[in-house]
Length: 235
Image (cartoon, rainbow, N blue to C red; front, side, top):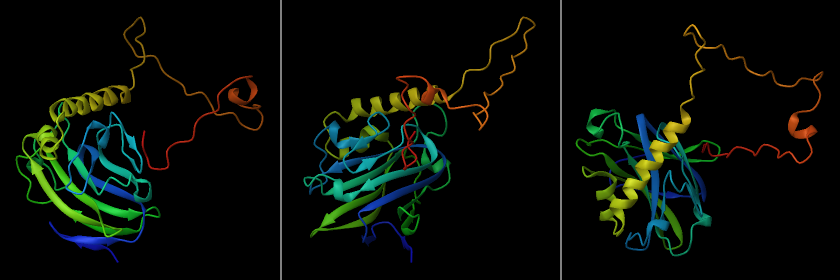
């Protein structure tokens, strides 16, 4: 049965391998910070974000999106980490500048099979452009999730400063730069113009069938086979 959390409420987690699913209705940046027993973040290497999308036990998307699936393996989180804060922020370039102008984001903790363990709708936001959505915390050897919903009108820089990160301003800038680069890479280039100003038609190369022989990666010596996609939806 799903626990529908309100701000400040917690719920025990019976599984170590989880997904955190985010539905925001508008593209948001997703990330997480690792904290000690007091929630203090000791350095940029304790922050997982689009520019550094993986840390032990955590994986996030490289791009802003309206829906996210963050991978969490609490069994792989370093022993020095006692708190994991899940962060959401509005992109710095384009789009809404405050959460009060968009629908309330919804975050859910699920098992890998999609079973929802706890959900939280982040209400009450107005001028804030960054928010701590959830906190996963270790207590007496077990993990729990707490609904936080703490917003920051000063954005990621203010949020990271509040968690004790000395390089908060620079890291916030780097995160938004990484999101901008990812968005630029995600936009396909238009086909070239013909002499009369029309776009060239682009035809997709058909996939090899049974009568077309093996693929190029199989038939070309030294070819590198395609790598499998992340099971957690990271680009």
